[in-house]
Length: 601
Picture 1 (cartoon, rainbow, N blue to C red):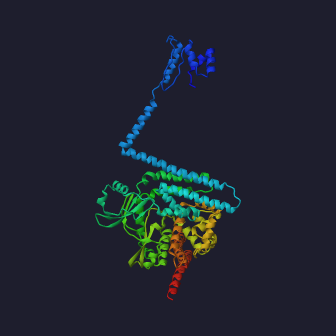
Picture 2 (tube, rainbow, N blue to C red):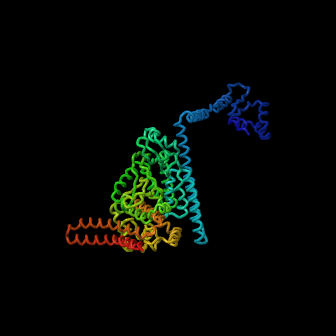
């Protein structure tokens, strides 16, 4: 039924005959009745046509004027449609005419898409865990089976989101895959594929960025440039090239151009996810992971810091080449997004076929690795915090150098940390107590170093040694891990209480301790991949040497601080420190001696 004008309604109410006819006819013949009577015709406002029905009576009639004036207010021009059309025209014209406007529009759409991917994945994962953790189960086995399935589903959802967004999300996935000491195996094993699945930037994008950043023509700078990257990582890719001026072969590290647009947003999104996770699941604090990424990613994205770290490491280790066989490529040019370095190729450190074909001693390689990273942690205090397989290579030398027929090449110096002196000494004392199986000193220095309490100590000892509780707490860590021990550790990680305690531990310890834990775990994994015929015992003796030297230096410093040189107390302190130092040094010497004599027969 048509909506009637309010004056027309009054007319119906005031005329009982009209009202009666209206009701009997259902409204269909009401207007016919009006035409036959002396009642003026009604005004029916209809916006699309704006028709006005008036009576033949005098148009000065007050009822006519009132109705007509009211209807005219309904007949407004459609300004909203005109404005919308103008805006749409301007937008389409901007897309066609202005490349900048077009690019900004595309970026806005991509940003919205990235936010959507993260939000959807977060909500789905949170829902899965809320459903599982709040469910009812008939047995403990059923609960663990459901939790394992939830871990796998959530890991698959997260992996899909990380792949879609790329960039630093790939790096986050790589971090997760390395956290075998923290996260369930469903998560770490699912993310392992991201080590080799980094998106590659196109040659056009690379050339455009290079010319923009350097102000030089790409073809004038290089006489040859391999279009296929030697390696692609989450933040950059490396190409082999030849400099036009000198003809020297170089490695060119180029940051993915898209990162400059999305990294600030992605960092905030990542931190938001971990913050939300803490609010929804306060018993699982992982906010430190978001904080660490926020602090480190912008340093890693400025290649000038990497150049400084590489030069510093190269300068320091030139006096230790006989022990380490370390090679750090020279850096020729460093810009925030471009790094041009000496080209040095090598094989993966775990390529056992390459080692055996070139008669490279696995035990010797393992010893050099132990010297490199123990020197960094206990002596220089300047530590490379990302020593995974992609950042370490080995190269055969036809002519032996510094007593070795190989070089260990260390790449990617973007992430380093400096260990405070006090922390370094406490860490060394902890390891000496662990090797000496002194549980009381282990607790004392473990709590000092990691700032933990007694309840966290057993878990911390297991995390830092990569062993189960029985081996970690007794100090029996020199033997290789058996398959039974590995399975026992995996089973322990399925326990809810264990995960909660581990999360609480990692939220408590200083961040630099977390990076040392990560470095320890990666180096331990590299050493296991080498299948060292001498086992891990010699590796621990090398570590003990560096720990003993660190403690000896600190003891002598404290001795000289509180006792006059050559006094009785000073001499006693000196003798005690020297005895402790040589006790551990002789262990390594005797072990090598016995091994050498055994090989003679």
